Length: 301
Image (cartoon, rainbow, N blue to C red):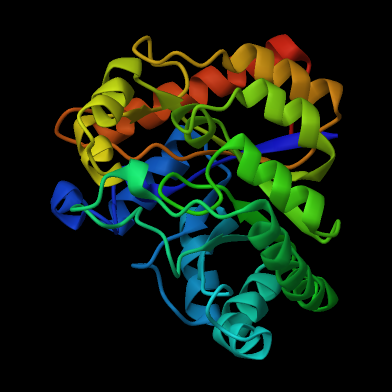
């Protein structure tokens, strides 16, 4: 099995904090990503919306579509209404041979609210999560029948944030619901990223590599800041940043041991005035190439 290295353009084009990246264009970000060596990008809001236009756009820069965010509302919407809401994205991603839709429940999240501390995120009971998981399984089966995989993104500020939430979601859902494994969100949530990978590696379909600056994480927690406050302050960074604290080599060793063969995507939203996007994205790419080589994890050309 071989892996591909992709990137989310959020370092250049932050949709949640657009003022941070106002000086950067999506076109410049695509050029940078391709020049660094990234094989794919996750879809951003400022890319062409239509399928033919998006295909031409990706082809122009020589990259593939390696997934993309989907803001779910399954907690409040009926299954049929949710299918209708995501149908266009599912069909587009199938047409463009994307590996998955990155799905996260956003009907009750606080992740995009600057005024709400991240600690005030919704915390559901085990029974509530398992009921949601049953409904999510039906949505994932519907996507699978259309040729698309649903990869659930645990996310800071959301109802599926920590390892307990993930356990309940995975236990309550069928195999059609796969897991997007995000190192930075796990650590920020107080989870052990390696332990989560060991427990749910057979459900991992997509991987996000981001690091965490411990001092910024502690600042968010102790002073009761929002998730976006943390992003603006620099809580996240790319693999290979000496200010980070995650042991990506050990995680990559484990991916090799479980014969992972999907995408590893760099997704590290930062203030570009403090972390120049090209420089940091290249640092992340070079670090992943190095540790994959050390782990014996083959990179697909």
